[in-house]
Every structure is written in structure tokens, then in C-alpha cells.
Image 1: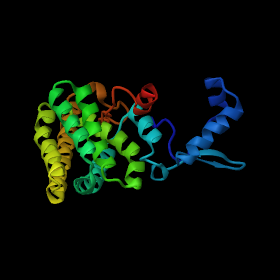
Image 2: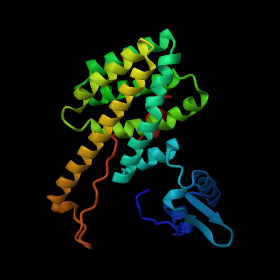
Image 3: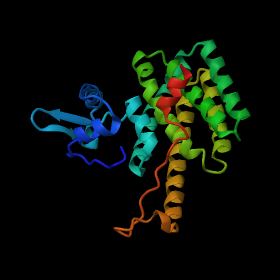
Image 4: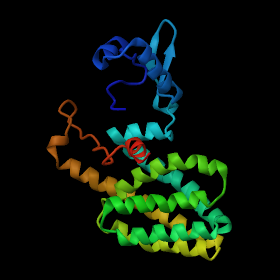
Length: 250
């Protein structure tokens, strides 16, 4: 994840055993887990090679959490916003058609929590995640429900980026309220449109963040690569890996 090993590189299994003070059996089990997530490929009589990024299960909750520890580049953040633009407006439409009264009440409560904690980024993000989780659950589609964990990780990553922009959280509130009202009144078209506008706003915020980030790096000599003279992208990191959050919530 850090880039220390590149695609095609062999895992230094002997070094890992010594450095981590583990047995070869434990290492092999760990490699199986990484292989199942597309990160490495074990080949008989050759060893274990790092897989190309195109083979990674990028939406796997663990892969997302591990990447959060090292940050994300511009392409990932843009791709993430695109995926949300495909999934969430349609989910809002289904929620308007299928949500129970109890789910609508939970959605409204989540929105009110966002409104109450707009200046508290951690509480605001938690309420925002609940808001989007409720909409996915209200679709009553088992495939979307299965996807909710990965989407939740992606949502947290995206929100931690946009919440850093001054005024972004306040500006998002009216669009969230429009989604709630459309679902409450069973207006599927309005729900889909409001969510589409909201995700469009998120995409614009991501671009604003990346532009600001790039500008800061250009004036920060400390971030320059001494070998190439170029500036590396400052990676966006959450305050706490999402996998750790899930474990602590159990």
C-alpha cells in the first residue's frame, strides 16, 4: 500500500518472518488472505509477487481501510465520486418508493444530527454515514445491502476530504434535507434528482480539495522529491482506519 513494493516484486518472505517475529505458517496464512483480496499472487517455485493495482479488490472493506492508512491519490478520489454518482441517486429513488415509516424517521433523525453537529466534523461525518446507510437499507435490495459496508468505507473517505473545505458541511445540508423531504413524500424523481445534485456537489468539493492540495504542495519545499525535483501528492488520510473503527464498535 505504501509503494515500497511495486507490482511484480517478490515478497521478501524471510525478512518478513524475522521482522514480524512470526512463523512461516502464519505468514502463509496472511498471504492467502492478501491473495483472496487480489493484492498478491503466489506462484509455485517462484514465490509471492505483488499484483498490479488493477487486480486489487478496491472496494473490499479491508483494502479500503488499509489504503486509508497510507492515503489515496487523485485518481482514486475521482473514481470514488463517480461510483457514488452511479449508485446513490438510484438508491434514493428506490428508498422513496420502498422506505418504511420507521426508516424515514431514522433518516430524518440522521439529518437533524448532521444539522446539530455541523461544526463538529467527527459527529457530522458519523451522522452523514448513518444518513446514507439508511437510504441503502431502505432500498430493500439484498445486493445493495451487501454493498453497504464497502460503500460506507468509501463514504467516510470522501467525507473526510470534503469536510476540510470551509463551509462545505453547511452547504451540503439543504441538499440532504431535499433528499429527506423527497423520500418522505414518496417523490422518487425528486429524491433521485436531489441525490444526484448532492453527489455532484461532492465531486466539485473533491476537485476543490485536490486543487488546494496541489497549490499547497507547490509552495511547500518540504514535500518535494529530492531525486526528481517534482512534488508528490500529499495523500488524504482519515484520523483512524475504518477497519479499526469497526472493531472498536463491536
